[in-house]
Image (cartoon, chains in turn red, purple):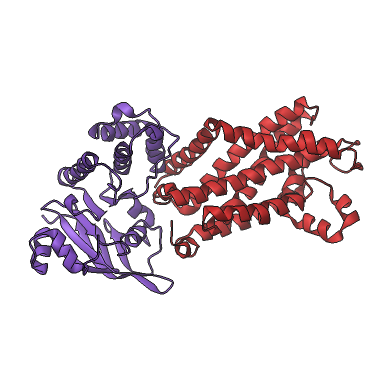
Length: 267
Length: 246
């Protein structure tokens, strides 16, 4: 087993995912429609109801659409992470996951490659979304568009690893609806994606605490600061630690000797 | 010279929540040998395949592929293994070539080597002209051929086939049966073929009859007929499995 083997296998997995994504036009469009509806409809309606004070990284008063943009970027990556995990469950039920699992490479590496592939897809979606948002007069400093790339990588990995972890526990495709209700929605709404922490504190201390410790909030803040050329160290460490925890648990979940595969009686 | 042992299974047992699916299963398959694994539904065939492919962990017993322990030397062992699963595992929206290139990438093959191997395997199965067609456009028999070609791309020593002819029409089925037997003879490939179709057995094949997780017979077709004192495999199978349908 040499390094070249790892390299080729990783690009094989990433290339396949990217190809599938660009050729599945419906998936590409639906991935964009969701955040755009939030931006054009929800944010426009909410603008009048929510007054925003000047808080870092913003240096002036901002429109609600500007505030919500990093949250919607997080939303794209959150849904993409869950979509990847859904496709893992589907692949496992349909059997194509087996081809990956019987190839002569360590399982952690195969899962990591899958994760990188999913993250690559989500980054593509994010940049298309930012391009459309630019025409809607949501502008970040040009350097922000570069700075945000490594943070998208980290946040995408963290949310993808969460999806991977969930996929190792989901028995059947039908159970995925539960994930939507119990993971995606609470994670999104109990975060700083839609409203800042201080605003949440005004109505509920508990909710603001939950939002503060929600790793999705930290990923959104990491993206928000990076988009304005600033580095949020706390959010970065928090997101990184969350990624490591989710990834380790997912690898254990997919390990034939320790994980859920045997209990499920399927591979 | 004695042929090399491609697969060795020793005292293998496996349970699902206390219910035994395999009980002290032991057998060996040598290079160039085509072994048919026969058993009724629920005999433990799929469990055995999941253990050999390391989708499940081996708790009791021992599996070796070409001398590599599947548990301790997983990667070396899996590199020697080609598998055709019962369900199709091809990506329907990708072309034949894309599916095969994905497999060669997973096995670390460079572009040039991959293209040569793909051409060789597809030509042998008369599928090379269809390499740019999407899997969705192919019929069941052709999909199976692509899967067999894929399983052979990395030159495995052992080919596992889990009921690969299920759902195929008679000519497609016979063509695949013939091709795999030819591979075992010409390429000295060891084959383990799970089946429930008696007519897929050739006179020179080895048979393993699995029933309720236990091996009821293991040997050449003649051996099995002798043990059961029968004239036909169908009868022998019927006797060994106490009348259950294959």
